[in-house]
Image (cartoon, rainbow, N blue to C red; front, top):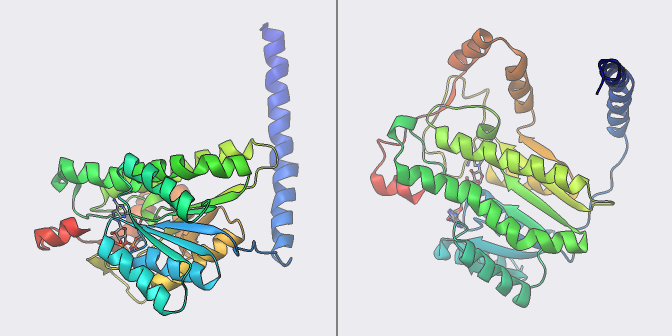
Length: 318
Ligand SMILES: NC(=O)c1ccc[n+]([C@@H]2O[C@H](COP(=O)([O-])OP(=O)(O)OC[C@H]3O[C@@H](n4cnc5c(N)ncnc54)[C@H](O)[C@@H]3O)[C@@H](O)[C@H]2O)c1
C-alpha cells in the first residue's frame, strides 16, 4: 500500500469511528431506553428439554424445580447419584413427573457423550443446556495443590466444553436452542483465596463471549447464550464468607438466583449479574484509579476466608 493510500485508509477509519461513536452508539442507547417501556414477549419453554448439570444441590436443584414448574421436560445430571436422585424424587413428590436423572461426571468426556446419547434416545433433543456444575476450593494460591487446580479447571471449564460438544451441534442444525453457563462475580473481578476459581470463571466468560460472537455470524441465528455472574449464594459452596458491612451485601438465596436465571433465559438476556446492583461496582473497578479500588476493597470487604482450617474431607467434598 502506498503512503497516500495509507493516509486515505486511516482518514476513512477515523471518520467511521467518529460516526459510530457519535451517531450509532447514541442511537442504540436511545433505543435501549425506549425498550425499557416496551413489553417484551418471553419465549415459551413448554415442550423444551432442559438439561441441568449439578442438579443434585444448590442452584442446580432450584433450577430443576423452576423449569419443572414452568412445564419443561427436565434432565438432571450430577456426579453425586444420591443427591441427583433426591432432586428427581423431590420434584416427583411435588407432582412433576417429566424429570429424568442421570449420574454423569462432566469432567469425563466419554461419560458425557454416552449420557448425551441416552438422553436423546430416552427423553429427546436437549434444547436448553444449563452448565451449572462447579466447585470452589478457597485458600491462597500458594496453598493450592496441583490436584486441586486440575480438578477446578476440569469441572468448571472442561465440563462446559464437553457438554457443549455434546449438545450444541444439534442446536445449530435445528437453529433452535439456548445455552446458560454459570460464571461468577469471580469471573469479573479478582478475589482473595480464589485464584484458580477466578481463572476458571473468567474462562467461562471468554468461552461464552466467543460463542456468542461466532453464532451471531450465522444468518437468522436462533441459538442464544446467557452467562450468569452471581455474588455469594447460600448453598454451602462458599463455607467462610466475611463482610465488613453484612447488612450492605446480602448473600443470595438459590431460589432467587434460579428465578432470575429463568427470566434471563426466556428473555434471551446475554449477561446476568446478580444482584444487578453489583454491576455498578464491577464496572467502576474498570475506570477507577488503582488506589481508589484498593481503598474500596480494603474498607468494604466481601471476602472468602481460607477453608484450610476445615476438615480435609469437607474441602474435597466441594
Ligand atoms: N454458591 C455461590 O456462592 C456461587 C456464586 C457464584 C457462582 N456460583 C456457581 O454456581 C454454580 C452452582 O453452585 P452451587 O453453589 O449451587 O454449588 P453446589 O455445591 O451447591 O452444587 C454443585 C453441584 O455440582 C455437582 N458436581 C460437582 N462436580 C461435578 C461433576 N464433575 N460432574 C457433575 N456434577 C458435579 C455437585 O455434586 C453438586 O450437586 C457453580 O458453577 C458455582 O461456581 C456459585
